[in-house]
Image (tube, helix red, strand yellow):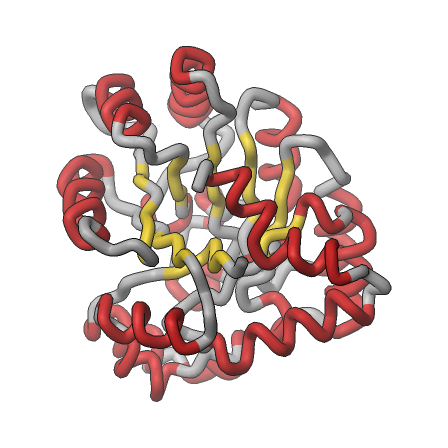
Length: 284
C-alpha cells in the first residue's frame, strides 16, 4: 500500500507566481516546468495508478471568508474518485467554525490543513488556540483523534513577504504539539522547510501525537540530516508525501525508499511509512 499524504491541486496562476521566484525554486528544487502538466485530477490519478499509489491526500487552505466554499470545492473535486481524497481547512477568524468542523467530520473527513503564512494568522493567538480546542472537542464527540497538517515553510517571509508572526516555526509547532494532545499533528516537510536543522531537532521532540511527512524534505535537507530525523522520530511517526505537483512519484518513491533503508529500517518499517501510518491517521 502507498498513500501520498501531501498533495496539492494548484491553479496555473499560482504555479506561474512560484516559478517567477527563481531563487526559491532553486532552493526548494521545485519542478515548476512540469508542474504545469500536473494540475488536473486526471494527471494525478494517472500518475498514481502508474506507480501503484492507492490514495492521494489533497490539502486545501483558504482565507476565513472562503473556507466553506473551498471545502465544498475540494469535496466535489474528489467526489467519485477512489484514489484522490481530501482534507478540509479552517481559519481562526471564520464564522460558524464549530458547525463547519462537525459538518466535515460527519462526512468522514478526519482533519484539516492549515498554512498560517498564506492564511495570515498567528499560531500563538487566542483565536488559533480556541480553534484547535474546538477541533479536539469535536474529535471526542466523533470518537477519533483529529488530524491537523501544518505547513512549515519558514522562509515565506523572504520569498512571499509574509508577516514573520505568521510563520509556522518548529518552536511554535512544538508548543501546539504539547498543548493539544487530543490532535494528531503532522509537521509537513519533516518539520521545517528550509528551517535550521538543529532548530528542528531541538524543538520538535518525538511525541505520541506528532508526525512528520517527507514532502520536499529529501531535496532541502542533507541526506544525513534526513536520516537523523527518521531515526529520532521512528518509523511509526513518518508519513510519505510528495508535495505534488512539484514532485512526481517516479522520483520520490525510490528516493524516499532508499533513505528509509539507509536509516536501517526493515521492509515492515518502510511499509508503515508508505501506507500503514497514513491509513491509520486518516482513517482510510
